[in-house]
Length: 174
Image 1: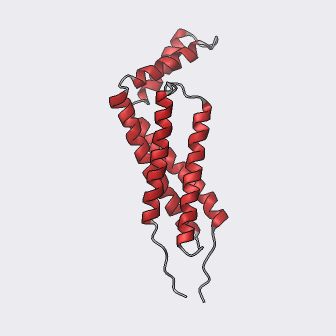
Image 2 (image 1 turned 60 degrees about the vertical axis):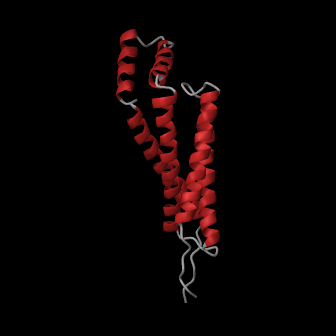
Image 3 (image 1 turned 180 degrees about the vertical axis):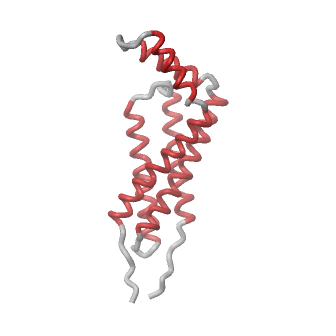
């Protein structure tokens, strides 16, 4: 029996683009419905389920193209590749949103956060100002994009690890 593995490049690109497009569509829905400055927790859950679904289906597609065989290292490679491409496309959307579409995005988010902090009776005005000042240091678009891609890679690794462990099937070499 030959040890020919299927190419993962096409699957990584296809599913990475699918992940990116679906993530951008979710972002557009959040923007159009005007919840982008203070999104409900359900949007995070939907985004995470999208990530799980696309990576899992991408790994399954690789396994199918590899005659039903899957090694954990291949699952990790495919899953992290999908997460990276999806994360980059999502980061491009974030850059477009914060730089071109809604240049006042950061200030709007900071104002929403200020209002939330002021609702806490234990927070003084000085404490709120200090918290907002700290948030502003970490809220530049480029830092947000970097954390977004790193987060995508981290969760892509975790999802790929579990999916790979569940779906792995080694090819017997005689």
